Length: 308
Image (cartoon, rainbow, N blue to C red; front, side):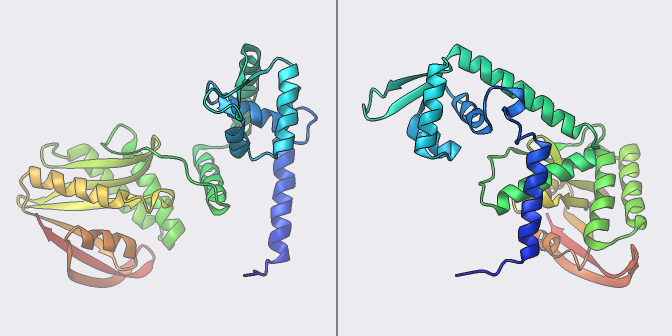
């Protein structure tokens, strides 16, 4: 099926390509002021990921034409960068590995590449760095690059996490729903009260991490002797679809049961449909609604309850 592509979108992609090749120095005669071209540097990178590699696998990973790769490996062999041999399992297959000189060359390129990336990011704050990395991940995903294996974790709060919770709630709900600063102020009061007065035996909070960075949160606080309240459930857009929201709610309810609560309540608004589905799957039921002006918008507040 053919798809009509807007010429402006094509022009935008080409303009970005020109910008990216210039800022990354990809048009220089030698990649990162080295004797290697960009393609040769990519081959070095792939070879450095293991002790040895079959040429057929190297070609697939580097996405290089067989003839082009053969010429690169021949130059590397002549320069003492690689060693080639036949596979003991199948003599038709060729094995290639970096020599000591080849690994030294890769180490120099790798260090220069890290330094170049560091210099590019040096002028950005934490928030802009996060935006850039998330945007790059979006580009890779949309263009068909499979996401790398990620490590996710639910952990208790650490120093600095309360500030992150306030900041991300304020920024995210303003961006996604247009809520004003009264919501951020509410979150700040909740976080401050928790930080100053919470009872560790009956109250706790958790952060969801993805590859070592915070991407979500939830709080369990006392409502009364028999009832706990779930508060401040949040999952960053880049981490959604991984089940982290459900895991945070599950951890919150598990703690509440162990702390001796018989039920759990929460408050949300009707426009937050994804969160509502998480609550329903966890066994919460809607018990009351209250339409009124909140956070700069006309919203329908909802009270939910689950028996533990």
